[in-house]
Amino acid sequence: MNRHLLSIDDLEVADIHQIFTTAAEMHDVQKREVKKLPALRGRTVINLFFEDSTRTRSSFEIAGKWLSADVINLSAKGSSASKGESLRDTALTVTAMGIDGLVVRHSASGAAEQISRWVDVPVINAGDGTHEHPTQALLDGYALTRKLGTLEGRHVAIVGDVTHSRVFRSNVKSLVKLGASVTVVAPPTLMPAGVGDWSKQAGFATSYDLDAVLPEVDAVMMLRVQRERMSGGFFPTAREYTIGYGLTRDRLALLKPGAPILHPGPMNRGLEISPDAADAADSLVLDQVSSGVAVRMSVLYHLLAGEPETIGGGSA
Amino acid sequence: MPTHDKVPAQGRVVLDAGDISRALVRISHEILERNKGAEDLLLLGLHTRGVPLAHRIAANIATVEGTTVATGSLDVTMYRDDLRSHPTRAPHRTELPAGGIDGKTVVLVDDVLYSGRTIRAALDALSDLGRPAVVRLAVLVDRGHRELPIRADHVGKNLPTARSERVSLRLSETDGEDEVTIQ
Image: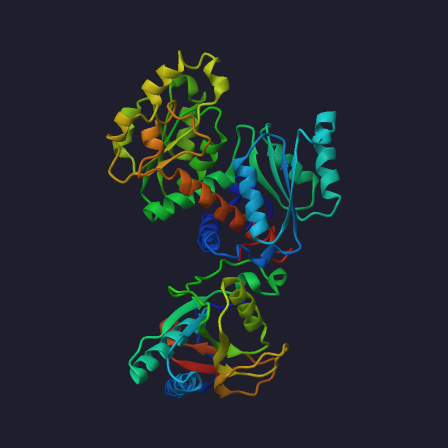
């Protein structure tokens, strides 16, 4: 497996399957009384989060601790970054203390890769700007695989603010690698420019018509509409967005029976996803959260537990 | 030791299918004798080939005592002391029977006992899963060269070996036929 996890491109299909297999075993640890595996005992992992996050950060923290690693959270607000320290100095200062792994979230696309070139420890991208969020895509894929079995030949819809979504970018890559076909649905104002060429190359379809796509898919992933977008002229009002592109109660009836509903969270109930959809029997939202810990345990284990020389070499 | 998926046939055969079958029958009887029956008995096979061995022992016990013995599997990958010297691999299934291991007589089942480090890892794994009343160990082959104070309660065959030699078990469930080879 690759030394860093910066993008889904760093993973072969076999690596993704290995991560899923390991995650399935890690998932069992959640149900035990003693939630500890000694695999990363003595290893130190720093969560370097320059952007707010409760979900991803606590998920990585729990994952590291359940593997017996020492996990330390550094956030931009409490750090010298707010005093104007450069990204490079922050990264080098932190790793100079002799740590074993970095989990990085930053508002600039490419930040995680940049950091990986300065430090000599494995770096995991926990979300960089609008670029990628590989562990989110992995946990989505894992949760879907648990529900549907193999994703080979399955059709998944990703709906929402695609232009600004790193969750979408990582998911499209992983779902296509796993053999699924993906249709991306968004209003024209939230579809990235040049998506036509990109989609041909990357193997996904695009549509502006949610009602036409929903009956065709085996699973639907709703993306959060960020508050900043509401006043950016991307759609007339929040209500207009919901009417055109929200997973309303009526739209639930369009879905195939048993088709899972995903959302990376946090949800804007009533905006992109109705309470009926969020709490439906087929909603995988809570599964995604518990899958997140298992998948992040799996990623931390595969990147940090093995022979140092093989991290960055071939796969096991 | 990294586990193989399928072991190719090579080397000198030290136990053939008949020897293996007779050894397992004897081990099954010994387990029942030691436990004075099948009550509270729990067989846990260590991946990979300890698992089919545990199932065969359970089948033998069912024939002799007429009762089903709880059987499960244990993966010790996360508890190994040599994680840093190999590439990582995905763990196998740990499946405990309903009722867990608390208060039970757990018999760990493995194919080859060598340094004892796998068993040490298994004991650590067990202590995170519950508190058995008793833990015993049954192995098909004991090849010596212990590096830790670990011993088996039930042994199919004691096989003196040189460290340079490799002892391999092939089972019909995993490799198509039953035999123990040394090379």
